Image (cartoon, rainbow, N blue to C red; front, side, top):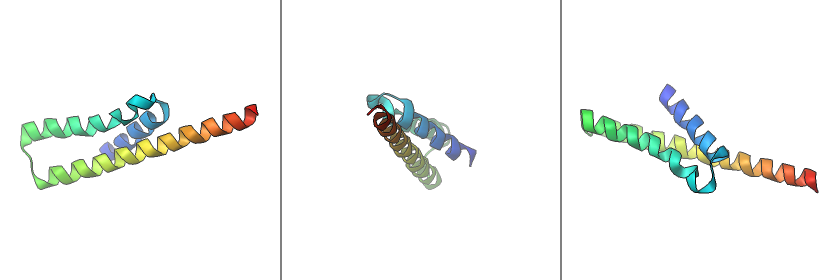
Length: 81
């Protein structure tokens, strides 16, 4: 459970603070961990399901981070006008 929370926070941080070309780099973390687990333990349905869930949670965090960034940019632009 804690791993999914960390993937969400990582996605949120990347979506909010990373440069535009690197925002989706957060998806590499669950993929790298899954690749290491597959190498050590082998591939099974449970691992694939957990990987899918981790990727969805990470992408959700990225999208929310991007929305926060756009909202903040809009709010600061409105203040400057």
